Amino acid sequence: MTNAANVGALSDTSTASTADGRSLRGSLGVGSIVFMVVAAAAPLTVVGGGVPIAFLLGNGAGVPTMFLVSAVVLLLFSVGLSTMARYIPRPGAFFTYVGYGLGRPLGLGTAYLALLTYTMIQAAVYGYIGGSIQSAIVELGGPSIPWWVWSLAVVAITGILGYRDIELSSKVLGVLLIAEIGIVLLMNIAIIIKGGDSGLSATSFTPNAVFSGSPGIGLMFAVAGFIGFEATAIFRSEARDPDRTIPRATYAAVILIGVFYTFSSWALVEAWGPDNVVAAAAKDPANMIMTTAENYLGGWAAVTVHILLLTSLFACILSFHNVVTRYQHSMASATALPSKLGSVHPRHMSPHISSLVQTITAAALVVIFAAAQLDPELQVFSWFSGVATLGIVVLMALTCLAVLTYFRVHSIKLNAWTGIIAPGLGMIGLVGILYMVVSNFTTLIGGSSTLAYIFIAMVVASVVIGVVQALSIRKRNPEGYAELTDAISAS
Image 1 (cartoon, rainbow, N blue to C red):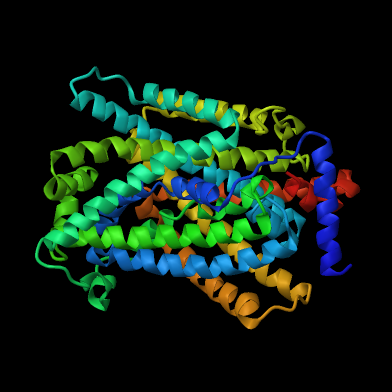
Image 2 (tube, rainbow, N blue to C red):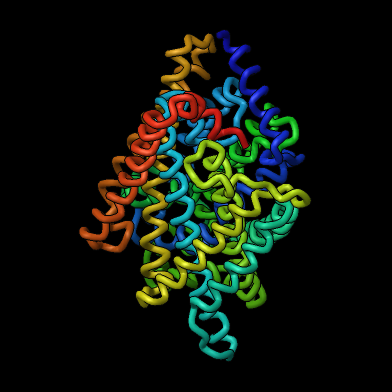
């Protein structure tokens, strides 16, 4: 079949899917999708929580360059991703592209890895937000209620929003996102106007700063800040004019996140001075952003940042909840998960059963963390965000390889930039980042080699489970296996 015929066949399958009441539909524009995925990246959480730790453990004043490098690599990755989307007009993101490019078994393995990755980052943030709310209430003179109680309350609110129309979620995320970006930009402008600690400079982008300390760890924290941007493709069925909306949303998300992080981390360096920023981070990393806001904007700003940090965490959770429920919904279409997860609410047009299951899963994880007496920030957040960082880099590397393979195997005629150069450079960059993540993984999750091996094994096991299940489907249901990649994308 020709490429056009393949696209037509996929469209027919999608149309058929609509008839059985299991197809997601909507009219999300570029703005709504960008809000969803940028909110998942949790800008204020990264700037206020991740950047100070990157200063401390990574390459200090050179951290802004790490965000710039990450943005360039991910933009190159996005070129291949967006180009392939024209030939495979399916929601499903990573597992769809890997299934078409590297085969159905690895495609299903990638789907399970994606579920693990997004579930882990959601679990990590549930711990962080619970601990943060507990601390804030105590600081205000309130009772010391266990962190997990607050986390479970957030699980309930997220479940209610996730059950309903996704437009409601996007509106909530949009308001929170504008507020958190606004306060950080206001702080950045104040820092520039006042000339920072000792005058503005470009020290952060010089080789001496970039290669100081541990640049590998700095790069890991930078890449972790982008987790979620690639989820634009998962909303394809709910997008207005998806052939234009999805690529534009993908590029816009990477550029917006990259510019915001680079600019904000540079401003934070200037606020304390390139020579003093590591010491400032070491003194109080958790409150560094609040102290900076107070120094340059006043006490009201510190309070505002503290509040918006909590809403940033909530926006992150809600966005990832929506992503996970749609992954489950897609996988249910391929019999990889129970068919009930593929149900769509007749009024809200949401994957409501999948949302309920994800809500129950999140609540169970919080209860397990509480029973194990894990620290919500030092253990829950640190450990599971580390797993998510490893998972996302593996996912992107596999997807980039799948894109290159698909173009070559199907002899698709593209210009050199979109067909070879951009995805090829993206692949090289991602492999380099993956090497750094694995090499520094023990440090990333807190220093335990045994724990590092367990978490790495979880990542590998998730892929193996998917591969084994796909081979089992091929054996017991050859016809179903032949349609596996299409079915898993027929949302």
